[in-house]
Length: 285
Image (cartoon, rainbow, N blue to C red; front, side):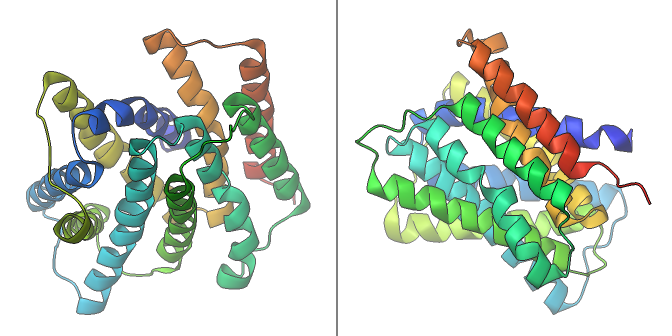
């Protein structure tokens, strides 16, 4: 089952791009995220109680988990949601964030003392090439500057949060750590609302369905798997699977939303898959 975690993660994380647009159509992006992580923190709290997982730890461990949540759920997701909400094309936002494995590879050596091999770099190049083919190169001339900046803030946030999470060595159970991270994300978005945004949410059936998907399948499912993978694998190999997110999102949109899937998309998916395989395979000793 554990061997299937990367595949399950890719499917669940990719599906989040499908439900992001319906959410921000009916709410302020920061209000939606504050609501989402309030629900997620309550959910992980209840799970931790029933599973007899300790919520007690040193102040240092708790603060570290909260700060990790600020990076993951605050700056990263906040940047993505805000970028799309002001007119940044989803594909371009995803393309910028897809640079994460490359940036992680560059920083994993000096920050985590991870050795990045030549096959990993080849896999990274192929992975990004495949993702770029799927997302396309039609950037256009009217991209909102704030949207571009927000997307790059998201890129750096998810990169540093991955490295930070790998560097942490607290003994909190995964559900307890996830609860504190969700609290960090919720508090971040509440602060943004207090100073910069309006807490507007329209609880339409579409919003409720899309938000339920992101709470249950993405925050409880995909994010938990990601934390497990980061803890048990090298940071550089873990993030390589992110190159498969754009192609998989395109396939999901083709199946469920009747969006176009052309030969270039299929070829890009094939190239990205080869790249991820090369970057993550175990080397022969």
